[in-house]
Image (cartoon, rainbow, N blue to C red; front, side, top):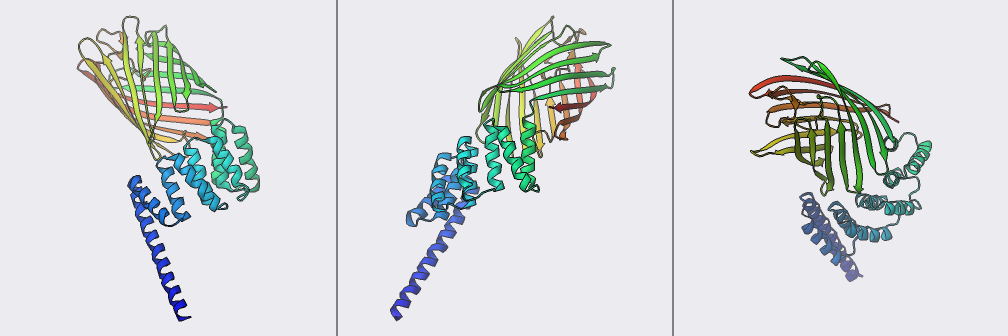
Length: 409
């Protein structure tokens, strides 16, 4: 009996040391993951699993695979853990997140349905299921399920926010009105406005716009159409066509971009702008590189104008901080040179004609605020200051105020 208790004591110490070592090594692996050293962390986890079939270790390995975008490996790992822990909410949530991040929305629905047998009426699982339904263009089903949950528990803020977001995203139409006032230190003010209608379709959004300008003692109009055709789940195009009989706008404008979502929350585009002023025309090459960092979006867009003597450059740096929705943000822009995407700011050339002079210098900064209220109305206000060379070697200051309102329906 004495030897039996001695053996039990040694066995207890051995097992305790093993668990203690496992915990220590898992802490090391977590620190490596924070430093994006996934290969080193994976080796620790797989070494531990080779010595002991531990589902805590396997679950941590699955999380690491998912965070490092190794979705197939994460899927296989979570499947094994679910078999061992069929009632574990944290495992189901991790597996559902993995399918969402991998854009496997049908798999999300299948996994969510499986989880309901052991975790019925769970809000966190419903949120992921509703997101997948919305991505699969089954927004009516998502809204139905979210409303059904709120009838039982009307105090879940996250469910309410998701329902509001899906309902807003699926409003197919909007009509907007914008007004811009420019004050110059040495010239009469400019007044600019537009009225536009936007329609979402299965192929992308289409916008029709009527622009109005009052400047240089005259008025003018321009008609434009913007389209954003969807090319794939990760890419879309931008097409802009405009016409004006007035000299205050280009008589014809054409713009095209190819936009692509890239790994690690980057996005990029490349394209061109063509402006025809009847007496002259210009082609501008452009593109952008942007990245989402948490709630922030940072983007830089250059404009390149080659001609026979030199290449002219201008550009805009944009930073936005998003809040509850994509329609709630504050932003700042810092620009240099002339932007063809600023439809109204056509500079006066040396001969007094209206046109696009890429050789002139300008510095500008803009602060903007965008907010959605009552689920249907979007307000945008902004203010800007510019110091621009409007004729060679002659500068002026410009203070701009914009206000715009859009109704979603």
